[in-house]
Length: 331
Image (cartoon, rainbow, N blue to C red; front, side):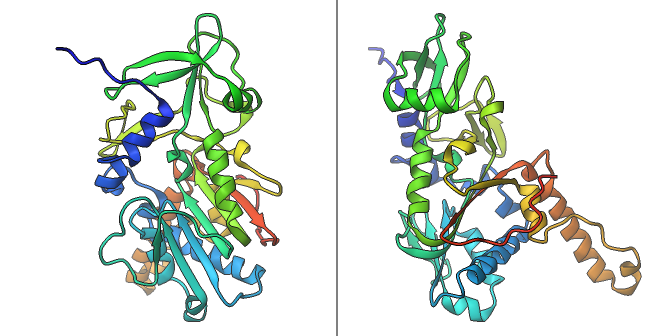
């Protein structure tokens, strides 16, 4: 007897496919499927270490400084930052890895592994490509121009369900209004707004940073951004647990009072990461140093390329402090 496929809203389907039993993030090594800035170069961890020092200065060197890595993967960013932190600051540092997957073997014992962000801490909360994996509903306009929720089967087959209602409808009207053209799609970012507000609310003082590919209200993509990543390639999104499922962030809807947005290019430039080629005379004076500088320049160029990783949005949310941030141009 033929079994009919089970259709779910995209939010429930993503939750199951990414974080449920046998889900992607519980059984796969994400770095084998996609490459983040953390994996691209140790210069990224070095930049975060510099930002951590700025936060520490703004907080007047508290007795305990938290570094919260939200969506920590296998702890790669925290490991890199710890390796680049001066002993005086490292002695006061309390690093938290927030991740739903089990703690990996061999991780630095100083790193506290937990499923939820800590509350009441002061320091830096850094969420690199976390919010784009928070499950959300997808809406599509029908032939009459009515926004309806999209349901999906485990094989990726979609169908339209009931109209978007309640808080989802209010979010859609405010942050991603649809023009009424049949087939127009939107990703309803309310769960991400709530998740980010809760994470930022756990800081008693300091800075929260969310880094993601993102868009603003005036430039929402008419077909949405939901996609899958498997073995380093973008593929059609199928909620079967075999791939990462991601959608770009509506960063303006997440931004609270005092928040600001920079491109990764501008943010990393302000933190000393630039792709300038080393002077040729260094090659004859210090060949090994020249090769290292040339490597760093190439990696910096990748991290700040506006058509690639440099196009990420950095959402900066200070909590109770004024973080000194020079060079806020978006060039």
